Image 1 (cartoon, one colour):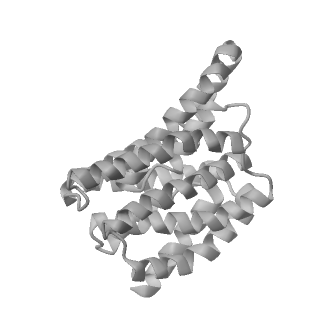
Image 2 (cartoon, helix red, strand yellow):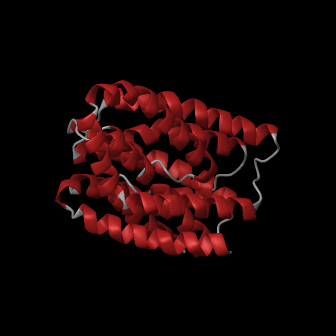
Length: 260
């Protein structure tokens, strides 16, 4: 089982490094469905897995000028307060140990949304480009506020399910910044934004006792070399094929969780 944990960490880390997608969307379902980890513990452990893995990947992207810091600040302005408020809500309502049924269905719903976003990624990007070209001044004026709102949405979803920072984040950025975001900057900005978000959400779940450190250690043992390798080859990998494969897997997993 320990060897399988390392292998799972390597595979997910490599996908995160290559695409910026797949941390929570792949790891949390793997922990719940394949390894039998309790949903709350899977979310808390995966948040720390994502934070530490993306710290490594983010360093590689930053060295290659792959981060748009203005967009990062706008996202963080929404995501970090939203994550803090969500953690406060969980604490005050006594929901730190979320009922498994609720968490499984919430996870399934976010995975389904993630799969749809990935599947229609190009169309969403094209729609953003058309709006940007038709009403450039109004579109640019709306970008800061809409980016903060996008960040807040990610903050809530990631804190509750550990899913969304990668796939949903990149699709949102493609819509909001259709001309500004190169593929490398899209991945780099999304990964770096996820670091403080997952650290904050992970700290809250740690305080609730939802982190399995033994499991986390084995996952990181595989994920760190995986994300390094993925980050280095990110520009040479057929992104469309990878996103299609991930979307198919997420549809299947989301269906199983929603019907469970």
